[in-house]
Amino acid sequence: MGTDGVNLAIVHDWLNQMGGAEDVLETLVDMFPSAPIYTSIYWRDGMPPEYRAWDIRTTWMDRLPGIYRRHQPYLPLYPLAFNRIDLSGYDVVLSNKSGFCHGVRTDGAVHICYCLTPTRYVWNFDAYAAREAIPAPLKAALRPLVALLRRWDYRAAQRVDHFIAISREVQARIRRYYGRDSVVIYPPVDTTRFRPTPRHDDYYLIVSRLVPYRRIDLAVRAFNQLGLPLVIAGDGRDREALEAIAGPTITFLGRVPDEDLPDLFARCRAYVLPGVEDFGIAPVQAQAAGRPVIAFGAGGALDTVIEGKTGAFFREPTPEALAAAVRAFNPDGVDPQDCVRNAARFDVEVFRQRMHQFVRDVLRGE
Image (cartoon, rainbow, N blue to C red; front, top):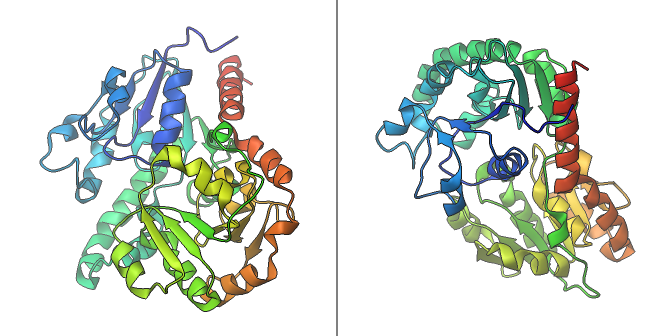
């Protein structure tokens, strides 16, 4: 049994910003072009023009004031919205979840959840509140609501038929928070865009949104100590604060066009991943370009970087530990082709094949 002709629906949390979840969604839509996309909100003018050709179906939340630019204040309403979506008429429902979209009703349909992460601000509220600088009185007031959302999220997870995790880290969270087993299928990365170059420059590289949990501050402080060139591509609300602590060897490029990224990756001395990622696409892109990665030894990096072969880990989340790892690691001792071969494990075609096979197996009852 194939997947052609299967009556399949895709569910996505929200369509008002671009990120890794939207990269996955684009691949799923390409795989299942006739599938409608159910989502809470859709900011037509803020998303790529090609999305307008998709069959996107929104909830009543799409009409709420200001939600396209600030969807977080409405978080308590998403479970209500998704719980009202009845997809029981489909053969397969495929939810692409980091929030609440796995809460759709699927009686009679097989529900496969591609889990980017269990809902972060529900299960790790204290860390989220600290990162977002939520005042203590508001944090205390929100705790009963978070407890309700946690109970709802757990119950919704029990209605899912099959979980797929994006990494071993997320697989462990699914087990810890939901008590459910899952298989790992890594997210799609277009590795064919990237190629090694015969020579590289002397700069180290970060490509990231400049937000607190990415721990760019840790890298800035480490490279201030090292006095080595660090190039940071990307933008975000932390940029001004990061520039304020950055020394003269650190360069901020802002947002870099996608077409310029392959050259930027290929010419770096090594890529630096200072924070914990659920998966982390940029380290894979760096390896596809033949460059090694120096990463904090946790999260998705444990799946994507082979220690001693395509990169190195530092074990403590401190500038000193990162600086020591940079000093100890010799990028010239890494074979670029080892990096390229490792990155190929995460290519888009691998994702497509594994996802199609998973759906086929589910339809066969295997």
